[in-house]
Each structure stands twice: as C-alpha cells, then as structure tokens.
Length: 449
Image 1: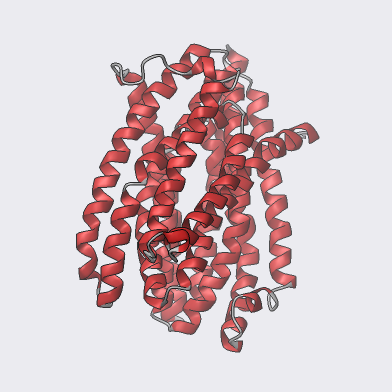
Image 2: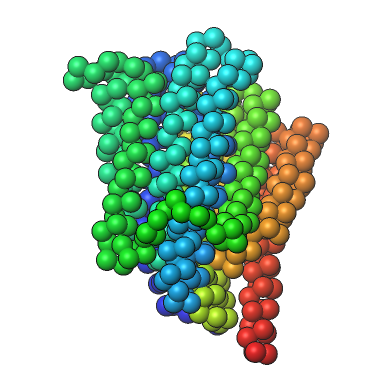
C-alpha cells in the first residue's frame, strides 16, 4: 500500500487546526456581512463589491506567503535550523515589500470604482471602505508570513486559537463602530472596515508574540530583520510564491467570472449559484487544512531525502481529501433540497440551487484532489508547471465549455457549472499524475545515488 494508517493520522493531526483556522477567517467575512446588512442594502452591496475586488488582489499576497511553508518544512526535515532563520528573515522582507505595493494598488483602485457602473450611494460607500481595508494588508501579510512559518514547523494550533479570538474582537468592534454603541460614533460600513483593520492588527501582533515566546520558535527568530537580504533566497521565495499566488488568482478568477456569466441569465440563477458556492466553500476550507498538512509532510520528507516518505505523505493526503469530499458530496445529494432552504424561501431559487448541489457533489472530489494536489506539489516546491495546468484547466477548457453549454446549448447555470466541474477534474487529474511522476523520479534518483 502506498500509504499507511499512520500517514492519515499524521495528516489529520496537522490539518484539522488549519481547517478550523480557515473557517474562522471565513466567519470574519460572514459576520461582517450579517452586521452590515442591518445598516441597509447599499452598505451590503458596497461591502460585497469591495470584498470581491479586495480578495482578487490580496490572493497574490497570500500566495506569496505560501512559499514559506514548504521551504521551512524542507529545512526542518534536513535539520537546518539556521536555514529556517534565514528563510523567515527574507520572507518578511519580500512580503512586507509586496504588502506595501498591494496597499498602494488597493487604495488607488478606489478612484476607479466610479467607473464600474454602480449606484452613486454604493460608489461613495465603497470608496471609503476600500481605502480603510487597504491599510489592513500590511498586518494581514505579516500574520500570513509568520503563520506559514510556524505551520512549516508543524505547529498548527496557535493560529486556530488566534482566529477564534479574532472573531470575537471583530464582532465586538463591529458592534461598537457600525452601530455606535457605548458612545462610539455610528460609522456604518466604515465601522466594519476599521474593525477589520484592528482585528488584522491583533492577529499580526498575536502570532509575532507567540513566535517570540514559544520555546520551539523563539530561537529561530532572525537577529536583524532589515539587514541585507540574500538574493538567492529572495528569488527562491518569489519563484515559489508568485506562481502560487497566480494559481490562486486563476482559480478564484474562474469562479468569479462564472458568477458574472450566471448573472447574464438572471437573478434567480445568480442567487442559486451564490447559495451552492457558499455551501461548497465550507468543505473547501476544510480541504485546505488537509492540503497544508500535505505540504508540510511532503516538505519534511524532501528535507530528509526520504522518497518513500514523500509518496506516503502525498498519497495519504490525497486519500484523506478524497474521502472527506466524497462524504461532503453525499451530504449535498441527500440534502440538496433542504440545504438551500436555510438561505431563502423562494421556491424557484431553492429548486435551481438543489440542482446545482447535485453537480457540486460530483465536483467535490475533483475540488478536493486538485486542492490537495497543488499542496503536495508545493511541498516539492513544484509550482510553475501546476500554474500552467491551472490556466489550461480553468481558462482554456472549463470557462469556454461552461459558456458553450450554458448559452449555446441552452443548459443555463447547470451548463456553466458542468464547465467548472470539467476544469476542476482536469486540474485534479493533472496534479495527481504530476505528483505520481515526480515522486517516482525522486525514488529512482535516490536508488541510483
């Protein structure tokens, strides 16, 4: 057998805190939407518009920080503590520089919002809100850098606890600043922005304090962060991080463009799409934890030059991901009519969303395998070819096929979702096959040395 029960257990042990942490970060946005919605429809519309734009830009920064985890796990596996210190130092320099650039980009985009064809009130609210959010990019990417650092060391629980506390701080901050409780000014949507800024400042400070005081990490802090960077290591971080970020952008962009196409069909179809995507995103957040665990375990095996361990870690994560997503898919099938009813009472929307959940049930496995597949390939520091495979899967095949099925063959929203299913399936097969090929090459290389 390629993997053992121990591989599943180790992956679960590393992955579940990451999954809960991811769900915690998603809940920040959910709570913001729920609380802003009580202010008015314009504020909710502005929040939706800005968060969509903000996320499309920030994923590049998130991807760049993802380079830290495999590099740290490889260094840990090879027993090179000093290398961990150097990686962290140079990652901080790279990610802070990128954070400043992204902050300027997001702030500047506020001046383009009037040209997006939105109502005047939504434009005014959006411009102010996105400017406030732009300042949160720096603390957020600092948090992400240190988070990926400790996760690379197989320490995954602290950021889960930080995410839980962050939700409490954010909700309380919203209560004070959106509605003007306890004598604070009622700032509406801007209040949600300031609460997010404060919360992201907290998570950055919390993870830094943890790293400074935890016995296994405090000795790995660089003595001088802003010293001269090492060009070779900086380029390695960029060469892994930039394609990772672009992969994330390609995937997020494909789903965002699919929503635009579904919007051409009408509000009923778009509402059903949003419900089905919202439900699918819950299982996706959990699978990201398994993906991160796969990255860590594969990276450790690479550092130890353990070719058997690479295969066991990778295929163990794939099996766990496929198993969980199969379970998730079955829930979508058996409760396809009941789940949408939690969101809306409109019968036509519920019926359409129920049909989409049947398609979603099939792409759960593909989505799980492609997410875990990209994670274990990242553990091998293999990101450039997966980027090309991502572009082909989603933008050369998935989106065009979705358009043809949806509009030419008149399958509507179902046709667009079948296109997404095809894109995810091709990405999944490509990533799994590439990992199988590369892990086999590692085995042969070690056998001849």
